[in-house]
Length: 343
Image 1 (tube, rainbow, N blue to C red):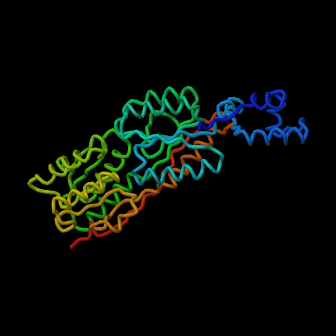
Image 2: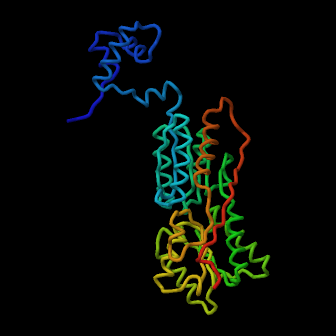
């Protein structure tokens, strides 16, 4: 059995009314008698009439939809961001359309194209790790599409941005390791081209400089796909473990890299933190029950989603062009657990 709906024209034909009369009756217009309204609405309900959202959006000038681009929704951080986005969007009467890049630039371009063909009113995006060229976004921005960046941002487009305090997160994590007595601190991170990598590395470097420790390039490992490929994390770890002066601690900078590093160290039967301490970025609710429990930097994902959506709605609903934009920086939180506890 096919689930189909009828149109306003079908209702008008069945009830021997004009299309205009049916349309006004469905909108509860004062121009139409109560009896006719009742007749039309009952028939519409019985025969599965559903308004055409595309036609409505053309009349209203809005689709009441927001496009979202993230790397993967399996990432706890992005799941929390999406929950924050939905909490604000739904309250304002907007729907959300979620797409995933899986850290692919090509897929990001396709997803953005798909979303704009769906006539979205605005776009919320966190760039993929492969993205170096944002021409696809610059074009849409010039055409007037409201865009707000969150988490992974770019300086090439002047608009609202919402990020966590990545510098402080990197600094606090490294400072904690130094204060706990660790000196040879390795850094496994995402590609160097993305904003969060640069900001977190800057915090790591600052903490080492303050402690009088020179940056050792052999201790810095970049994962080209942000750790999406477990092999790139395993290669980075093997290179660190093969060094003459092996690190006594590792600072990782994403959910995926952090939890995978913990898993691999356990697989290699390296005692944490007795042989190597580990601290990273993670929003997983399981950090307390991992073996050992994981010291980490927590980002306010839900709040980031809320703030980004509020700024996007300001752009969408503005009656005049907006030229003043801001970058909101939300605080991170350092949570210390067993994986960095000095023995």
